[in-house]
Amino acid sequence: MWTSAATRRLVEVFAADNQPQRVVAYNATFLSMVRPGDLLQTKLYHIGMRHGKKIFRVETLNENDEKVLEGTAEVEQPVTAYVFTGQGSQEKVTY
Picture 1 (tube, rainbow, N blue to C red):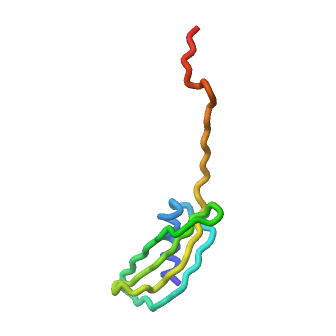
Picture 2: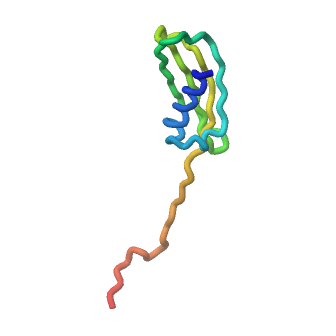
Picture 3: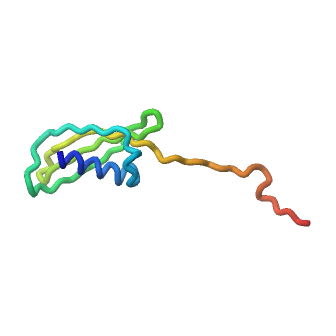
């Protein structure tokens, strides 16, 4: 369970810019045992988009490059606004 929670935390930090509320879905499947003291490596792959949300594939490997966890995460994109002031806003007015 710790491996899954640690992997999700990395998704929150790197894929969601440290905003956990942007991770709207996360699932993980355990593939092998993790022994105490194992060094783990997690990889995130942006694999697509669904309804404007980024889809990531996650993998966590042990020090023998054996995959111990794999899963997916769905991350909302940050709110963005483009503001245009309109035609002529850059004109210099002289009185």
